[in-house]
Structures are given as structure tokens and as C-alpha cells.
Length: 174
Figure 1 (cartoon, helix red, strand yellow):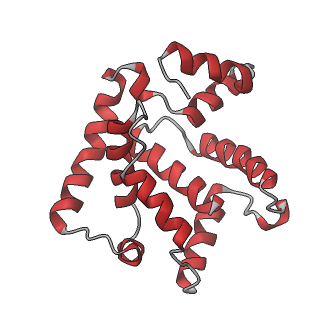
Figure 2 (cartoon, helix red, strand yellow; figure 1 turned 60 degrees about the vertical axis):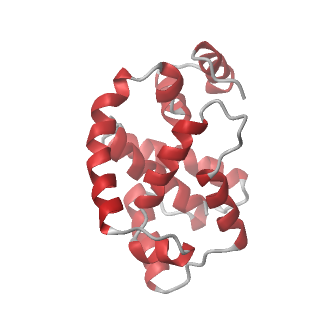
């Protein structure tokens, strides 16, 4: 699960923000390796590069080992229907649908969610639009916590403390 989330975050950043180069993607992957270890994933089991992580996931899928569990369906339901009290609900609903659309067709089919040619065309047209218009959005809606954490670390700030303050400044209440 963690590997899928990391790979999806890298792909979504490429499609919607596009600021990370290969070195930045590698740094993000290495930071996420630490998070995986906190989830008790042994470091030796984690591919060492973001490219090898992507290849590992593709191999896992090719072997037919990927399954959509009840837990995965609950996460999908949460993404497609976020809590009503979430300030960012409209944004999350749109972003989650786009993220789901980046999954390979056979995985979307495993979830039983139809995704026709019109939806695919709309999604592919939306990514360049997001990339161009994202800087114009209010800070509250363009705030991406992992990217902000990365920038803070690069600047020598403590994301654990400073990220909470950054969220408050843009009006995000958790």
C-alpha cells in the first residue's frame, strides 16, 4: 500500500505541479522510505530508487498479486465522498477523481468504477490546465503538505513544527 501511495504521489506531482526533477523525486522517495520503516516495512524490502519502486510495482501487478480489498474500497469511498466538514472537500473530490483516473484501466476495473473515453479525454485535458492554473489558486487550495515539507527540509526548517504553522497561515484547520 505504501509503495502505491509513494508512486502515485510522484506521478501526480509530475502531472499537476512538475517542479521536482529526478533528484527531487529520489529525495522524496528516500524520505518516504523512512515513513515506510515507521510502518514496520523493513528497509531491505524497499526498492532503493523511485524508478525501481515503479518497476517493482509493475512486476507485482504483472504477477497478478494486486487485489482490491475491503479496506481499499473504504479508502476509495472516502476519497470520492470526503467528510462533509472537510474545508477542502470540493478540491479533494476533484483531485481524488483525477488521481483515480491515473490508475491503469485494469485496476480501475478491479474497483468496478466505469471510466469511458469521454472521462479519459477530460482527465487528460485537465492535467495541463491544473498545472497552468494552480499558482493562481488561493494558498489554501494549492497547499501540498509533502511538497511543502520537502521545501522546508531543503531550507533547514523543522517540518514537524513549521508545517503546522504553514497550514494555519493558509487557513487549513486539521
